[in-house]
Length: 140
Image (cartoon, rainbow, N blue to C red; front, side, top):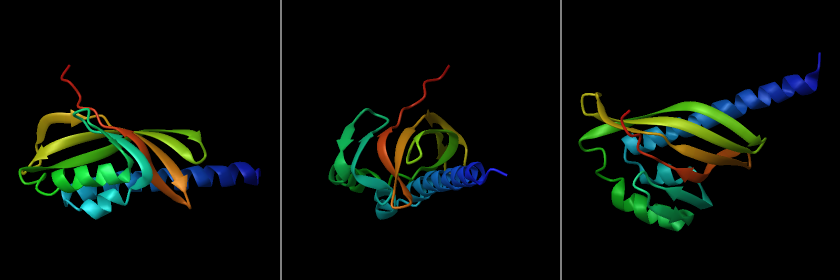
């Protein structure tokens, strides 16, 4: 048995689970309008481009924007995220594709799906949002 391959496969599985947990935490933070939980997912030097195209550079800008927009954002509905794909650029850097869907209070899709791309970096054993772009998906 090649233990290097086995260990590597185990590491990849653990990393995939950890990345999936970041997506789940992102959803939880937004649904519950938990600003601090949301901000805890980012590196200090992260960049974020919102679905409306607003560029936010660094955690201070991301935090200011989030503190203005997240509280009250889920008054009329909710949001869900699904992990679609992960490309490991390096063992500690991953491009993560997700699918987002805004929902009514009854859990019905609003017709405003999103297609976020998150570049995550693993630091001190933790995957953090680093370079991120959220994009509204146009109807086909």
